[in-house]
Structures are given as C-alpha cells and as structure tokens.
Image (cartoon, rainbow, N blue to C red; front, side, top):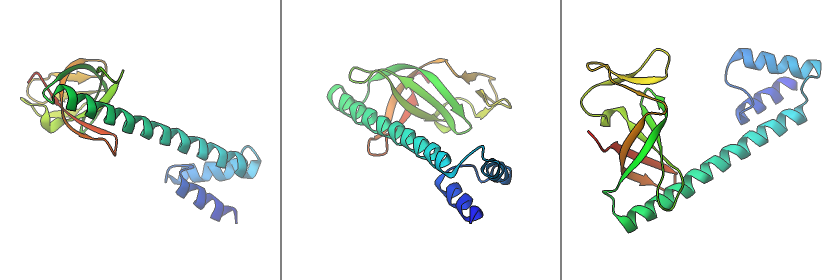
Length: 160
C-alpha cells in the first residue's frame, strides 16, 4: 500500500522521477520523519505557489498587452537579465502599467553570433566574439509577441 501511495505522490509532484528521491521519501515515511499528511500538505503548498506565479504571469502579460496596444508595439524597454538557460535569456523590465514584466529572448534572436550556455550555466557566451550575457546585465528589448492567456512574452534585443 505504501508503494502505491508513494507512486501516487510522485505523480502529483512530491519528488523528481529519481529513484534516489523515491527511496529517501520511503525511508522518511518509514521512520516517521514524514507523514503522508505532512507530505500531502507540502505538495499542496507547492502547487498553490505555482498557481499563484502562473496567475501573476498571466495578469502581467495582459497589462503589457494593453500598454502596447495603447502606446504602440515599437516601444523599447530597459531591463536586465534575470536568468539564462541554453535556449536564451529571461529579462525583467518595467512599464507604465506594470512594475515588472518578464519575457524571454531566444538565442536565435541574438544577432551577430551563436550563443551557448557556459559550463557553469551562468552566462550565454558568443562562440566567435566571446561576448557574454549574464544575470544582471542591462539590456534594451522590444516585445515581439505576447501570449497573455499563457502569461508568456517573447522579446527581441533592441540594440542589435
């Protein structure tokens, strides 16, 4: 029965699909360090936090879409890199209606070089130029597309 409950909790997001995580969770349940009730509560809290973040993203996207409709889609925004992954950079930027919007610049839109994530996964580095895009770097962007229902914003670098 406990194995079935563990699998059910894994499906709901209690642990990664890593066998070590499952074994650790099983041990914590067996020794009483964790109960199914507290584990379920933690899962529900994580899910509530995820839903809240998603709702914030959707609201911000609708505000940005309205701001662009009223002020024009060619508008440039000053922001800063808030994260990097192999596929591109996340950028946080402010506007008139929203304090902080966030969008994504795919590496394929970063012109002039081919960018790859460095070994430490802290920067996107140009293969030819060696130019790096790091967390906290200032960047000027334009909005390429807003998918308000999903809370996603696609960006283009405005300065090249």
